[in-house]
Image (spheres, rainbow, N blue to C red):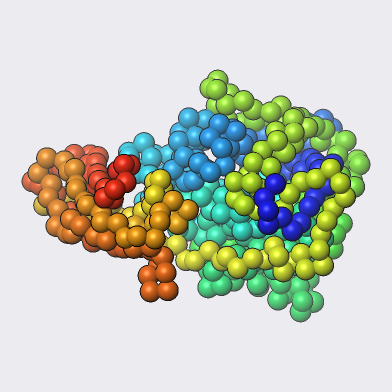
Length: 486
């Protein structure tokens, strides 16, 4: 157990909340799927499916692949690039941002570049609908849950609003394991995303309307009007996350009412309903889920988006999914030096728990066309000055920020030597050496190298440039790929 543990969660009560999360997810997904894409205000009363029927839903499916990734790689290896590899191997759909991200990866672009390039679905719903696996493996740790959710979202949303949406929902849900006040959980989620993002604006708008006494229908219409300019107002994250928050607020803790309030807003109804159900399941455990709705949906998981012919082991029930997620939770908490731990004893939640879990981390605005690499002694962030297109004799500028890893490096400076490996005919201008200092009051432990790459008279469809960085006295070189599309 980490030495800085301040909050302890009873393992049995935690398991009940995780199981309720997945049951709630299945309820909302099954209830909302028949109405997905309807733009008008709806009048949903309950299930339109027969008892025992569970409709497949990519909202849950993709999380089964992320669980497989954590099981196979361990929590420290989870990032946008590694999750991208699992996308290509195990996730079937090619629609919208899913297809764009996958196609960009097959052309050689690493996430989050794969989620940025020529992607007009960056602000849509594909990422915030798959956050529960991160929240459940980081209970009471919104910073950790948001970190993983953003790495996940970058694969197919890059620097778009869809990535901020995922950070918000994951943080809100992680907080719900410790904080019983829904409004405080929403506020904690909101604190983790840039205040000037459209995502934050949409959530604040719902809160303002609710506090002003507007009806749920009036609030929905206000949100719809505010975001009419995003993606033609269609399947975009700011409004649909706002509808989810609307359902949670106007439902006032009642599971059925909350679900129906969200679904009646229309649009991506399987996503809003599933997230409402999962969030209330985390907040209240199985006691919060109506017995008749739990019985109607059963325990089964039906997939539609996972390549089951591969080596991905897909749990067939919510019970099995719960057990496997819980098995990974202590590893995720330990790997991230979390202040929360699971215990066989009673919950230990101090009076200042809200202050503890709020932390101080807020994700900054993301930069387009940036990729992140981690090596034994340093990390590197590579930013292109524009989209990764190159034409014969064309130029593109590349900025490489290298930051030392204090856990590995000592306090002495290191000389970096740079060498490029380029396609035939390409050339480069820029520094060949730099000094990487340790972090102190005068230096943030980083250095930046600027380059201009120039293509030759001919370019290929995919042009792989590789920057080699070697630190004097360190055995492991850094090989940083920069892929340009002809």
